[in-house]
Amino acid sequence: QQPVQSPQAVILREGEDAVINCSSSKALYSVHWYRQKHGEAPVFLMILLKGGEQKGHEKISASFNEKKQQSSLYLTASQLSYSGTYFCGTETPNFGNEKLTFGTGTRLTIIP
Amino acid sequence: KAGVTQTPRYLIKTRGQQVTLSCSPISGHRSVSWYQQTPGQGLQFLFEYFSETQRNKGNFPGRFSGRQFSNSRSEMNVSTLELGDSALYLCASRIPDTYNSPLHFGNGTRLTVT
Image 1 (cartoon, each protein chain N blue to C red):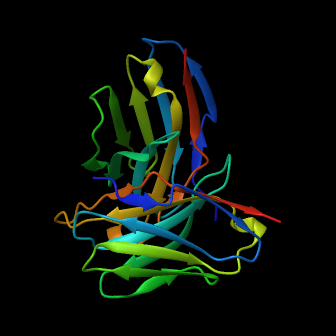
Image 2: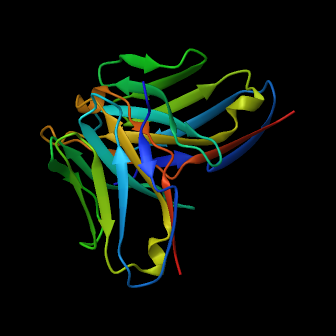
């Protein structure tokens, strides 16, 4: 089942902060975050693992609430280069055959 | 290190035809996943292959199939194409640690069915 992302779209001025949320109805092993710019491939940003370990990007942070099966991506002091569509992907336990299921994305537009 | 390579970049087919897409993963990556991307639907999981075996499958009809070769390269086939199959098809590779490793995506094959 697809995770649910919110908001679907957001427009910010350069320097403002953004929060993108991702929630699942199932228990999660991990949450992945990717950014896709128009006409390009999605690029890995961050993985949040059950148990609190976080692997990923320097300038972007995220949280993972295992009890609520929710994650949030925090973009602070946004730059023009942050524009793009952000996808969260979730993996649920499946006896070693976990698959990464993505949400429908959040389109972030940063304006000068 | 070369990234994930997908060929061709663009394809135009007519309804009823079949198509084969190719994906070469990053060297050393043995897991290859395929996703369909359409506006509003995000990235829909098609299937994942690991060591020439399909490890996972999404909710797509049997017209969508794939395979993986001993060198980890993968192909995806769609038979009896429908207009709704028009999409960007993305391939991604990862080391096979499942939830502990990120996906590395190729630039995709844009399929247009007329």
